Amino acid sequence: MKNSITCNKVYTAGEVFYNKEIFFENGLITEIKDFSREAEFANIAPAFFDTHINGGEELYFTEHPNIEALEDMISASQKTGTGFILACLITSDTANILNGISAVKQFMVENPNGGILGMHLEGPFLNIKKRGAHLAKYVRKPTNEEIGEILEAGKEVIKIWTIAPENFSEKQIQLILDAGVTISAGHSNATAEEAAKAFKSGITLVTHLYNAMSAFGHREPGLIGATLANKNVWAPIILDGHHCHFDAAKVAYNSKKEKLFIISDALFLGGKKSHFQWQEFDAFLEIDTYRNSEGNLAGGAISVGQCIYNAVNKVGIPLTEAIDMATRRPFEAINLQANLGKIDVGYQARFTSFDDSLRHFSLI
Image (cartoon, rainbow, N blue to C red; front, side, top):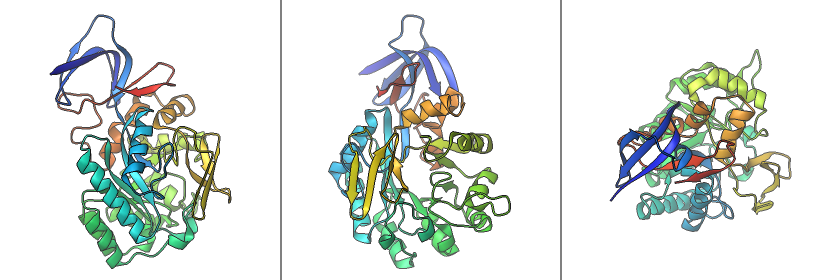
C-alpha cells in the first residue's frame, strides 16, 4: 500500500523546503514531489529523538526497569512529538542495571519499530563530587569485571554510557569503545587536561552540558571549558532555563555550532507527577523542572518540543537549526544515522507535525 502526506514546510537537516508531497511505502520514504494545492500539514520534521529521558508520565525506569515503564516512556514521548528515545537508567546496583538492559532488549525484539532504540546508562562509575541527584551509596569506581559484565549483557542495547573519565584507565575506556558504545563524559570533576586526554582517547560526547561537570574558570576551564574548546565533541543541552541560563545556552550555541543538540533529561513528562520518591532519591515538580530535597536538580520536566520552543524564542536559534538539534544531530552524535533523522528518499517515514507557534507537536 502506497501512502503520502502533503505539507507547506518541510524542515530537515538544517533546511526548509516548501509545498511538498512525501510518498512512503513499507515505512520508508520513496519519493518527494512539489505540491501546489492546500496541504494537510503546516510544518513537518523528522520525528524527534531524545537520547536522555528517565521516565514517562507515571513510571521511572530506574525504579521499574521493566517493559511497563518502557511503554510508559515511549508513549509519553510520542504524545509530545518525540518518536525515538534512548531509555536512561541511572546509577544503581549491578542487578538493577542488568534488569534494565534485559527489559530494553526484550522491548526492542518484540517492538522493532516501537521507537526505543536502546539504553543510555548514566553511571554508576561517576565522580562522587559531581553525583548530583544520583545516590551516593551506588556511586563506585570501575572494575574490569563489572565493566565486562555490563558490556556482555548490553550488546547492541547500550548506545551511550555516561562515565567520569578521570576514574578510568585508558584500557577501560578502550574496552567500552571497542564494544561499539558511545562514551559520554558526565558527572565528572575532570580538569581540562584530564578532559582533553579523555577526548583524545575517543570520547566524543558529554552528558548534559554545564550540569554535573567541573566548572569553567579562566585559569581552570574544567570539563565545560574543554568541551567548548573542542570542535569535535558533541554537547547535548537541556533548554528549560533551569539546567542552564539561556545566556549560557547562547555561549554554547556560538561555540559548539553544529555539535550542539537537544535532550529533555525528563524525570517525568506531562506534569502529572508532583512528587516522586525512589529509595533516598526524591524529587519535587517546580516550573519546568524537578528538584530534590537537597535543592539539586533531579531531572527535567519538559519535552523536546518545548526545548525547541525555548531554543528559538529564548536563545535565538533559527528554527531550521533547532529542529536539526532534535533530529539529525543526535543520531549522528551516536552513529545511528543510517536511515534516521532526515526527510529524504530511503529514510524512515516517521514525522512530527507542529504549528507556527511551536506550542503543539504531534507524531504523524
